[in-house]
Length: 179
Image 1 (cartoon, rainbow, N blue to C red):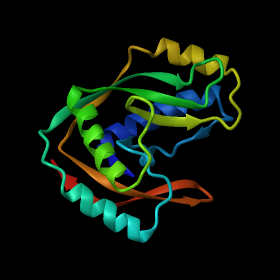
Image 2 (cartoon, one colour; image 1 turned 120 degrees about the vertical axis):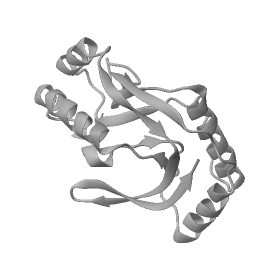
Image 3 (cartoon, rainbow, N blue to C red; image 1 turned 135 degrees about the vertical axis):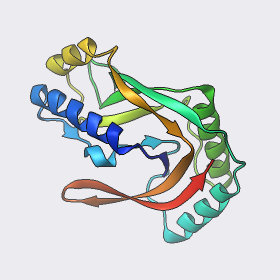
Image 4 (cartoon, rainbow, N blue to C red; image 1 turned 45 degrees about the vertical axis):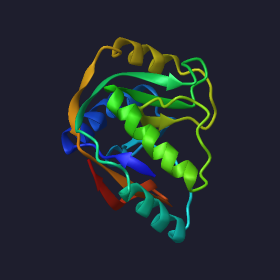
């Protein structure tokens, strides 16, 4: 999947924050901090042949100007009453959505289904198998809604490969696409 990687300092801060949240919600499936990334387009499982085609198409994208992304606050999809995903918020200029849109357009031309929702950048911190109320997590996240987790500059993105293992998803960079 095409993604923006995060600097180590951001991974460290996310790990620190996850520890506090995990203490009040141990039954969530927590994302490994080193695997957290900013997805531009989810592709699902694709063949080696498709990886080559995706890489070739993304190499043809026009260059983009670097921009800064900030991380602030926490939330839930679809909401805090019956959460399926717990996330860290992303504050970004229109350039991020434009880049995601350009990636979306290219992937659609390769036959990947277009998202039917607007692009909502976020960093997935945890998932819930069964969406049920998590009052302690919702309360703690609410107290942290104005908390800044730092910012970083985006000057490139990557095609990540995901492999499931007993420890959860493990990610590997397959290709790099500079701005």
